[in-house]
Length: 177
Image (cartoon, rainbow, N blue to C red):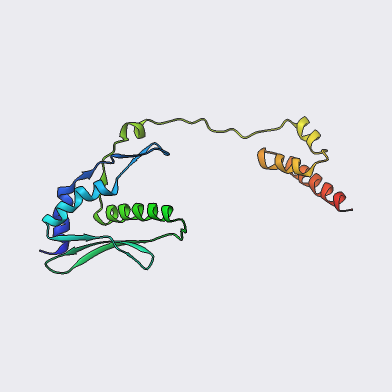
C-alpha cells in the first residue's frame, strides 16, 4: 500500500480535531501540540508510518515516513530570526502544530461556530467633517503641525484641503526665514 493510501486511511480515522486549549490573551481556542500528537501518533503507528518533526537549517519540518517503503511526505516552514529563546521555543511549537495540521489537512471542529455565525454589526465610522466656518478659521491658523493633524484626521473638500496645504507651506516658509 502506498504512503498516500495509508495517509488517506489515517485521515479518515482522525476526523475533525477539537481545539481544546485556550489562549488567555486572545480568548481563543487552539490545538495543543501534545494533545494533537497524542491523537495522531497512535493512528500514524497503526498505519505503519512514523512522524518526525526535526528542525533543519532554520526550518521546522514535519515529515511522515512509510516504514515499509521509505516513501515520505513533508511540510516545512522557515523559522523567524528570533534571539529570545522563549519566543523561539513558542515559534517552534506553533510551527510544529501548523506544519502537521497542514500536512494532514486536519479540520478543526467549529467550536466557535455559534459565535462566528452571529453577525456583529459594527457601526461604520463616518468621516469627520468640518463646517465651512471651521475650515475658514483653521486655514488661518499659525501652527503647521496642528494643520497637518487636521489633514490627517478630517475629510475635506478638495478646495479646503488645498487651502490648508497652502497655509502649511506658508508657515514652513516663514519658519525658515
